[in-house]
Length: 114
Length: 117
Image (cartoon, rainbow over all chains, first blue to last red; front, side, top):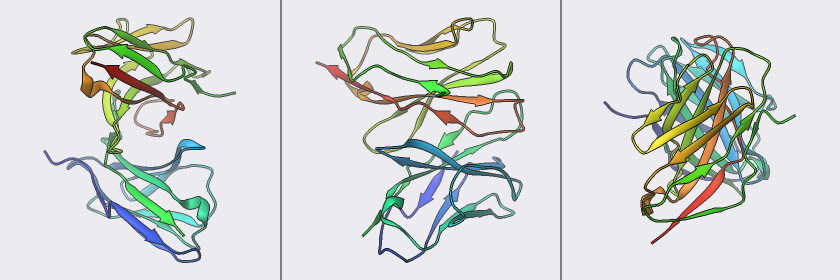
């Protein structure tokens, strides 16, 4: 079974630009969550999508948005990039239902804003 | 208040010895799940072990076991027979609420484990 795939693995963008990150979950998983990881703030929850609907949202500005497609693939978009957006962005997929729903993570996209 | 607390500084352990990584949590929800993840330098978060709040027994997965003390709100990870490949960051995480309605994980700050040959 293929794992969670995130593309691209690395990105360098300039302040003010926008960026789109992609995540393909494990086949059959309907929930996709996004996390931002920085040395200072650690791992912070961005949002979760389940069956194409945003089910949870973290405390991030509106510049951060996402969506999920009918095949469960998800994209995350960050507009008007700031230096502080430099981080490792991790995507996690899970079944999204049932008592034990461990999340399986991709390798992440490392975004550098210059 | 922090929901997940991991306060140990960088941990060192000799190869083949056991090591305990501490985690305390805070929640008022009676239904929750606790997870441990390993993050090597490559960045990927690797799921290690899960403990549900209603589970009667401590979870075990191969060399990993979880010392779950519900009254003390602690969920310490025990790694037995450490291997050089265990060197990584270890994160404790919690999911609160009725399972299936919420997949959000709250993570601790992590602990760096170094295994010495």
